[in-house]
Image (tube, helix red, strand yellow):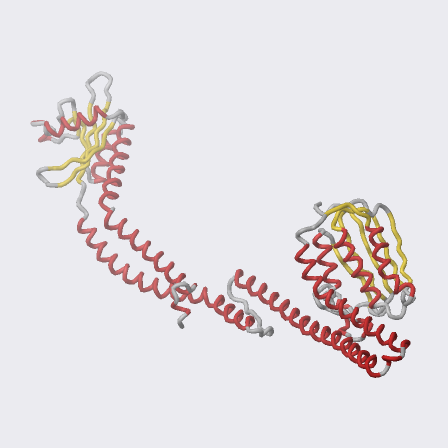
Length: 473
């Protein structure tokens, strides 16, 4: 409950934004309908009178001008007169007007002429106070040009009716509308804010469970595309975390076994040297050799665990130089002479084209070493390994083929993962940390290259990587 009313919560923020929006709408309505309505009404009325006057001026001199003038006067409820140079009414006139022609007041007519002659146009529109009626009037004036007689003036006069009563009515209505609108806005904004924030709150609750180590949590989708995308991403992250946790447990189990076995042997053979073979040079040497071998095995295991972090932290500082992958492969193979001479491994190298590239020699050498070591570890029966270095137009492909146990189809997507070991076997022949292939992938990708594997269970494996001749291309 506290989260729902927290000032930084999405629920509270959305509710606040909705209320601010509703308040702005209400303020605009009050301004337009109450504060600015008088000026708006005056502007609209002036524009209307201007339009009528300009239309009459445009048809002056036509046969139906007088008829149009009378129709406009009656239909619009305004006074329209034609005045002469003295301000006397020329048209329209009734019988009584013929006896004594009506005339515009001199002050009003002088003001009319002044405003008409100082304007740059042929007409003028202005407002003036009507003293007897204590009200504002709108006056329109225009010059009606005559060819053979003095010019006449088009004079339009209409009351600018006060709208105070209308404003009071609108004000009362707006008070009611404002109250109803604010109540509806509060309810609607509260409903919408909760509806919008609920999926995110649900995802947050699930994320807390994930943070507690519950990897069986599923992030549920909502009613919005963005929430669905976030849920998909979190579900994918959960799957990866679950897989990493499984790999971590397997790694601990593997390393525990791989550490325990040589330590047990070292202790056993050490006790044998102390208690039994200490005076027998031949047995003592055999037992000490076993201790040395097991110590070397422990050292390699520790080195493997340190290599991945070390290499990945150093990948940003690549020492790029030109070198021949074929020469580097042959150099690496010299470190496996024991397996070729003592274990009976047949390792052949084939090469085609130009095998020179620009890259980090030491890191590529380590990737080659790890692939060869991996092939040897999983070639228990058929000890034949074929290495191919193929120089192509803009890249070089390195591949290594063994005829060992191969890889199960369901394991292919995981062999490049850190700490993964195919088959999860703890046999001595497969001792290792499961870091080697992950190192290969990291090194190759740092050179903008690609890695891959082709394998069938029981038929061996073909590992390969492709590097551009220049890692920056």
